Length: 136
Image (cartoon, rainbow, N blue to C red; front, side):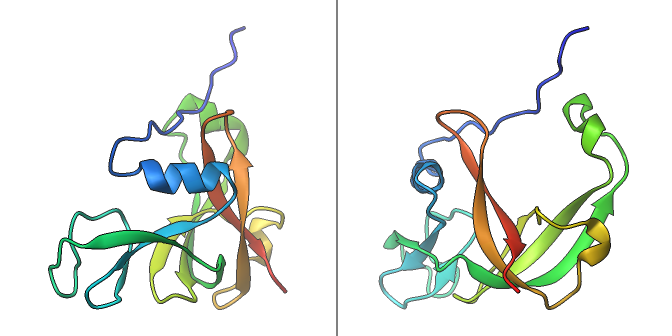
């Protein structure tokens, strides 16, 4: 029987700084150099002031669980052994919300408002993804 692999993201020119940071276990987000607003996902200009001068900064990696769902449906065979798995929205200290997963605790332990911190899942030598774990 062939082992079915999970899909692995392919960084493009716009997302390369995010994936470069993740490979080094740093959570990178964008910030507008004109007004200071932080942004996610990757943008070519600021959501707040529309300035095209955005740069990358390292986020603290700390946040709180805003919301979550448990995925029971197998949409890709590479995830079949993991259902049910969680998909979460995390409010980062920097003031933005990102989507990820919580690892290292059971789905029954997830609670809205729980403190989280980033950890990284090294999928390949070139691609790592941020996940979150309980900080409490």
